[in-house]
Length: 309
Image (tube, rainbow, N blue to C red; front, top):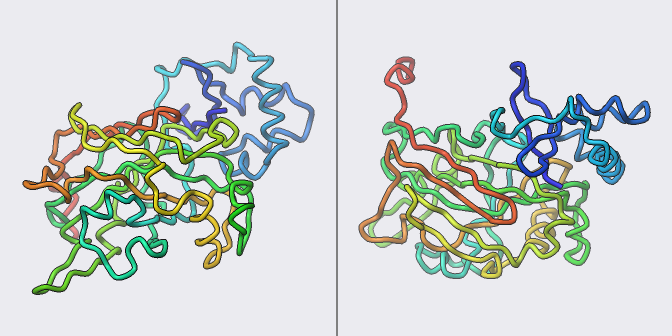
């Protein structure tokens, strides 16, 4: 099942993607027995509804009321969820780990950092190029885990039971803020280097976990203006999806709707010479074929946006 959010009548609505159409779930919900409408209030309500929400949706898909079906190309997609917490794994692909400056813990234990919901943009929304923040803007294609069941200290062999589904995130990074050097010493600042406006394009949909039985068998790609930048496999992860969930849950109680980014494969601009940093006007597309493609154009920040700084 593929879950989307889309704009209609100046509000974001929950939809189910069916080929090239979207089922407006809230509009179709009155066909269900009374008391089930709340599942379709928003993506978080749907995720919290668990198996009952999925079963209710299957009933709607069997009926497919014509009045609730919209053409995909007639609407604008929004991010499929606005997570309260975005937990991001760093240095989690073997080849990518080799193309960056390593630390004593690189590859030995999972590394993670945070982004906020303020960083999220949806399909076709701009990635803002702000020269006051960075001139070394980079992109990273990542498989993102959408948590479906809460848990703390989750055992690795139980971890995948806590997954609702998967989506794609472009972990946009300001490399000159992230990687800092002084002489022979290199360190990472994961504040402004990772979390800023439009640094987390997310979408185009959430694919439920039953459609991705093995998250370690997915192709992960990035294209800039049509040219391949990254082309890797989740099989190259140092710490797999289950390990990341278990590890992070030792620090945080994971809640429905939380997002875990799983790291990026090699091919980022930082690892190339000369580095092809993202520039205004370029189109960045990140793809996992089983989920889809999210495309965002790089747009220079408008001068007026800096007036109050």
